[in-house]
Each structure stands twice: as C-alpha cells, then as structure tokens.
Image (cartoon, rainbow, N blue to C red):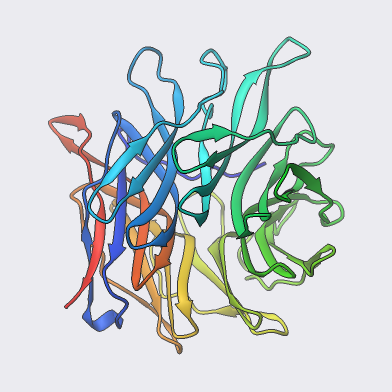
Length: 398
C-alpha cells in the first residue's frame, strides 16, 4: 500500500521556499515568501515553473465548513504574489475516505498548458462503497478542467507527472485494485490519456511516485516495491527507452528494512538523481535520507548528510551537474518537525540552512527555473490554540 506523506501537526499551512539566484550554498539564503491559504488546513505537494513569473504549486485544502471536505488546491506565482485559482474537486463529499481530492504533482508545458494529477474518491458504480479513481486536470490559460483519464480498476491513483511536450506527457502511480498493488503508468499523446504497460517485481507490491524526462526516449520513474518479509520496502526504478518500460537495478541499504524513493530529476542521459529515505524499523522512530545517482551505466548510493531521529527527502530539482537541491523534513529527538534543504555542489551534498517559520514545517516539492529554486510544503503554528497563518519561503543570494 502507498505510504502517505506523514502529517505531524493538527493545523496545516502552505509553505513555499524559493531561491532568487542560483549561487553557492555559502552565499544563498532561503527566506519566506507569503502564500495564499484558502482555509485552516492547506498542503502544497508539488511545484513546477516555466519562468520566474509563471510557477504553479498544487496540493489540497481541507475545508473547515461544512464537513471537513478535502478539495484540490492550485496556486500561481506571477512574479509578485501567490494566488489561488479554482480547480475542480470531483470527489464525493460523503466519501468515507479522508483523501477525497488531492493533487499530488504538476508539470508545466507552457503558460496555457499545465497538467496536475492526483485522485478522487467517489461512490462505486456497482454500489455498496466508494471508489478511488485517477484524477487529471489541465490549465488551458484561463481555467482548470478535468481531463478524462483511464482507470485499471476501481481503486487507483496518480502521484507524479512529467511533460516532454504538448503531445507527450507521462503520469505515474499505483493500481491498488489488482491482486497485488502494482505500478500504473499513463500517457497523453495530445488527444487522450491511455494506460501504458509497466513492469512489476515478481511477488511484490509496487508503487511509482515520481517521473522525470530527459527526452521522449529517455524517461525515469521511481518509487518502491514491498513484501511481507524484510526488506519490506526496496527502491523501484523504471526506465522508458521510447518503446517500453523496464525495471533498472537500484541499490539500497540492506540493514534498513524500509527503502523508498519519492523524487527523481533527470538532468541528462548520464546524470539522474533520485531521493527518498531509509528506515530501520518503519515505526517513525529512526530514518535517514536516501540519495541515488545514475551515471549513464548504473545507479549508485550517494551519502546524504541529513541526520535525525526521522529524516525524509521528498523532492529533488536542479539545473546542472554541479547545482541541485533536495528537500524534505526531519523530526528530532525533541519531536520538533523541521524542514530539510540540501545542495549538491558537484562533489558532495551539504545541508543548507532553511528559515524557521516558528512551527512544524515539511517540504514535499521543489523546482528550478531561470536562476530560481522553489520548495513547497506545509507548516503549522500554535498561539494559545492551533491557528493557521500564511507562509512561503524564498532564497536570495547575498
């Protein structure tokens, strides 16, 4: 089954980080940028940008009234401020599941062509329960609309999307409705979405959570596969060569029974990064960032400097072989939830200081565009009782 992103706090708020000019970690400072918060609980899960004045972030909002419905959320940066844009939320308001309408990933083709994917929960056509179905929405330059997407069963979801061109967009996720939960890959050819066959490790469940493209014939997807015996989770990496998807061997830490990849970034054919976490017990009491690199021949483990009782990396972005960013969060021994930002300088990964918004902060998505880097997620604060307060973060070089 898919491991949902952990929420440690009662009240959630959107949080965005950006970096104003790519510079070295020594002379770059991440700072807060105000973001829109339509209700008391807001989470941004992914971000994608076409330019420094055209960036989209997506996630979900849980309404305070009337019944705590979860609705899709999309915000846009125009170079000055973040603004919420209406998005369809097809999920049934009486659905028994909490996760009714999340948008999990976003990819921008152009200013009038942006894709977001997730899933929604609605009543079963057969009656007697609810279904979880794939959700794909498109921005046409003026509004967001639902685009019909196929479902391999009555229980499926999409978690990652990547665009090669207007006629070549990929989405990945999981088909929960099969005998064993399995990978799900869908493709947009400019006219419709269709399911593309994807491999699954024999005898194991499988999940894909992120996808990134070098070109139309060089695409990577990552996630994990699971079993009932140790190692319970191991990384799953799949590659598309222009005609078929295949599983590519990926390393993991044998002493850690839980190894999961959450994000992938393809810079070139011989320079691809994947990030996630490794966990010994799977009980939320220990953990370490997991970083892997493709050198054109094989995947290798790369040391992550993230330390903490619980440490997770969720997204990676960058523009060159000497400048990349990984983001996530950790929980220390005092149970404080703190954001993680790491930078790759071409030789090693180093932790970069991130601002403390005064509450629990987690980052789930990151992107780079025109010399800027952005990270998005959620945070919560408490003043007397739990309250929400807008927060976004940005980096400016000194």
